[in-house]
Image 1 (cartoon, rainbow, N blue to C red):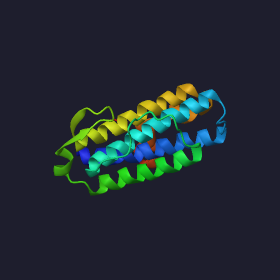
Image 2 (tube, rainbow, N blue to C red; image 1 turned 120 degrees about the horizontal axis):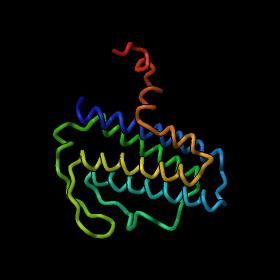
Image 3 (cartoon, one colour; image 1 turned 90 degrees about the horizontal axis):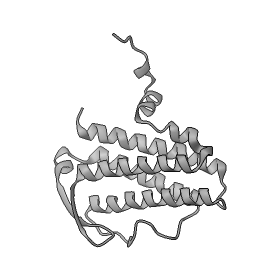
Length: 170
């Protein structure tokens, strides 16, 4: 399996995991709860990082001066924006070439310091960063623990392709 095929699958998984967690959070809907607000802030941070790296991948500047803003959108707006961003990454993975994945890209972090990563490294960062913060939210909000604990790649693969469970082991 190529890294491109793996990354595409991981971005599909990320979109699925985000959607599962966000649906659980919308069911709670308690935006006045301090834990819920902290969870939204955490997910907003993860989304902003996704958007910043999207700009780096597109070779354009972005408008973020921080990846931890004080202003957090309402849950439904944030989750709509996240779905849009997830769809962008899935589309990007459909069209990027192996040569482009290995290309090194220079950019500037929000702290003003320069950075340099391959496109493949940036994509891996977006995947792992999001997973870390979804897990953090699962710890903050016990009400979404089922959605957060189901957030595993193997679980996604078996849910989306049940034939992976229908074979004889040796």
